Amino acid sequence: METLAALLNGFSTALTPENLLFALIGAVLGTAVGVLPGIGPALTVALLLPVTLKLSPVSAFIMFAGIYYGAMFGGSTTSILLKTPGESASIVTAMEGNQMARRGRAPAALATAAIGSFIAGTLGTLALTFAAPAMVSFALQFGPAEYFALTVLAFTAVSALLGSSPLRGLVSLFFGLGLGLVGTDLQTGQARFDLGRPELLDGIDVVTVVVGLFAVGETLYVASKLRGAQDAVMKFKGRVGMTREDWARSWKPWLRGTLLGFPFGALPAGGAEMPTFLSYLLEKRLSKHKDEFGKGAIEGVAGPEAANNAAAAGVLVPLLSLGLPTSATAAILLAAFQQYGLQPGPLLFATNPALVWGLIASLYVGNVMLLVLNLPLAKFWARLLEIPRPLLYGGILVFATLGVYSLNNSVFDLVLLYLIGLVGFAMRRFDFPVAPAIVGMILGPIAEQQFRRALAISQGDYGVFFTRPLSATILIVVGIVLLGPPLLRWWNSRRSGTSRTTS
Image (tube, rainbow, N blue to C red):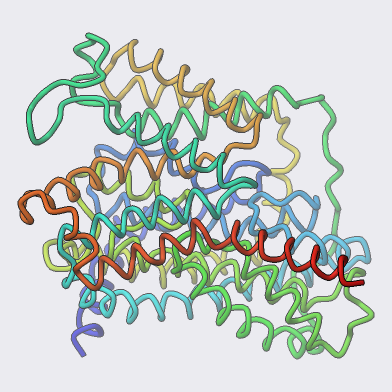
């Protein structure tokens, strides 16, 4: 009952005219962002961080939530009409959705994606409503040792499971940790790694790093690969809609996709990619129309799109209840919390319930807005794909520069922005994941603070991390994440070698 009462109070916050306007702005921006290839919610939230400084935290996060959900909605349009996923989680949608478009069934593909996203987003938000408070009760048992172990788990999971190589992920993580160390030591008051520059005494602004790695780095990378050719957009006629048979074939995949997506989103580095692939494989196995897969099966669009949006809701569970980001967008949302002097976690539910529950309530409202926007305006969103890439990315670069300069009116910040942007370009070029760097920079100071606090309480006894059951369990999971994959590969190679010798 307490949860329902808190949610009702959240609706009273989310349904004010001002917050409804920001939810609508976020939904429209997010959908447009999702439609445009290569521009994900992480980049958009990063660009808007400087702009939203003058907004109240509640309004800013309601808008960010609209952008996040809207980008997940809009990504299906690019995948279906262009076979170019705007987000990695939309890769599976492109496989069957584009084939449906080629067969003249783009309206049905867009409709099942939009309705599936709405159903999965709503059910995922419902699960978030009840899962987050339960997680908060669990998190209240955490002390400094447990929080340090949890940050180590976040570092390990994001570095080892994101990107093509755990080593590249760890390099990216340590780059972020290094940036987080710049400035004044909070416990001793000593300046460190400031290179004698007074501008660095307060540390490197996380907004500068996020915008540099995502916006500037991505823009430079796209410019380096741009050849001037415009992708051919698949045209479609008629209204976006589904036949009775389409509904019959889609409703079960929507529910199964939701059940797969939400738990993966809540796991550290679980992400949305794995549940979308699992949903596709499950639908292919269960479908009575197996011969259509690869040629435009509607189940192959419905299930993965539902999994994608349910995972987006799942990501918010550890972020709000533990302060643990499990995706790049969640890491940037964590940076936004810190921008307002807030720390997500169990205490946030007690100290700022209007923000937390207003944000959760806005997700219900945003899902309805997105359905209303996506079904009738699908043709308009498709037109966005015709914007020339040079103009699009040039505009992003200008917007990023103005946004960061407006923070402190400092030329030094701009120099720092473009230096970090060059690093971001190099990371894209050589396939280093960017998310671990952001997680390292944001969580690094928190990990250091909790580590030193735990040692102070235990009078320098390092065993405190292994004698407390919860901390020890989390560190064992860290060991499994780090050592499990190489040990499994070694065991498989040994078994294959033994079998060849025997034969």
